[in-house]
Amino acid sequence: MIYKENTSIAVKKPVLFVNRLLAKLPSKDREQILADCESVELCFAEVISEPGDQILHVYFPTDSFVSMLIPANDHAGLEVRLVGHEGMIGTPLILGVEVTLLRTLVQGAGSAWRMTAEQFITALKQSTALQAVLNRYLFVLTNEVERMVACTRFHLLEERLARWLLMTQDRAHSDHFHITHEFLAAILGVRRVGVTKAATSLQQRHLIRYRRGDIEILDRTRLIDAACGCYGASEAMYNQMLG
Image 1 (spheres, rainbow, N blue to C red):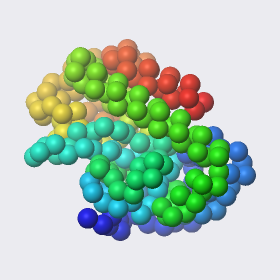
Image 2 (image 1 turned 90 degrees about the vertical axis):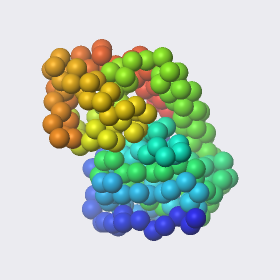
Image 3 (image 1 turned 135 degrees about the vertical axis):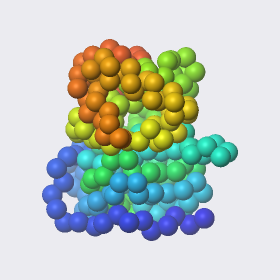
Image 4 (image 1 turned 30 degrees about the horizontal axis):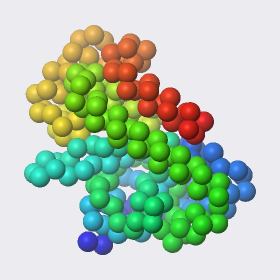
């Protein structure tokens, strides 16, 4: 299946937030890459790719974020990665693979830098700094996947939900965002009733406010305490490898 053109809108407005991978590059390398990029607006619920699609573009989110989902039989898809301003979409190209095995769904609307796959491959060949940064990013992603397996197996749903809300807050740059029970159940790999119970518990403790898919983080410090230790560990690994 060919990677379909999506509904992303090219814009010429200033980007309010930076992408941390690009910010890590020397100014000369970063400016060269940005010269080949266009700023696009990713729309909520937009599907950027489906499993088996050819990768035509690479995205560096700034104030948008996406869920990377792996299909499982008739299941809507289990989330294996949440990507915002700290990462990129199109990582298989780093390894010379031109197709994706994941469903990429925009969960938070906003801006991103986009460049063609051909331009990205050329930049990767020309910039040793870009190679170094993205190799470290791949290491971080590998660590996150390994941690997620253990997290899903051993940690309570309420802890995992708290962790996911914190990760979303980090990428949304806001205490408010929208997410339905159905989607939360799908990405966490549980039944909807389980998500309802976990969210109700967090709300009764005045950590969040949740109504008809609208979530507000009320007490981030205590929500961190309620989350499993995977939250701080993953962020520490990213900072250790990428600063």
